[in-house]
Amino acid sequence: MHWLVWLGWPLALVALAVALWLWRQLRAERGRASELLCARMEVENRFDEMQTQLAAQAGWVDPHEAFQRIAEPLREGVAAVRGQLREVGAGVDDYRAHVQRFDAAVQYCLQPVELIFGADKKGLDELVSHVEGARRALFEARTALLAHPVHAATPDAGAARLAQLESRLRESADEPQHAD
Image 1 (cartoon, rainbow, N blue to C red):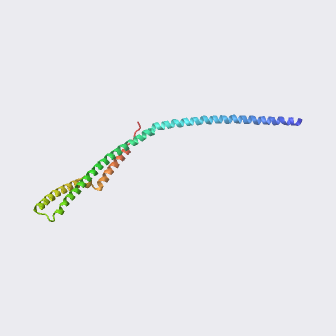
Image 2: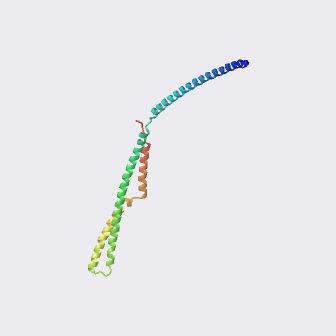
Image 3: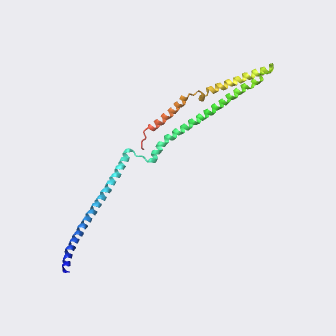
């Protein structure tokens, strides 16, 4: 058993040397880890500083504020279109009223046709008077109908107004937006 004791001492010394070497490696790794952590924190700080500088140079704007800047011209454009649609709607209603008056005048002109057959002198005079009044109402209604902008407008006129609106929207979108 004596030789085992002598054999145990060198093994204990080797184990102690290995433990010391591992302990030194652990300390070195911890030192490197703390250095890397400090370097990482320094890089993150520099990154934040650079982002702040870039935002200041580029005129960074809050996303909500940027959305509001974009939405405002759109709101104005939509409001203008709504107003124009109301005008068009009123014009179409007015045009329909003229068409109804014209149709009524035509019907009024056609009523006495049934009275022509078998009419006496007095009835024919009333018929002629009725026809003259009906013709006058018919021609007035037709003139008003033909003079109405909806009837007089060509399809190109509507396209031209739409092109004007589109160009205004593009111009407002092309205007540079400055950060305040």
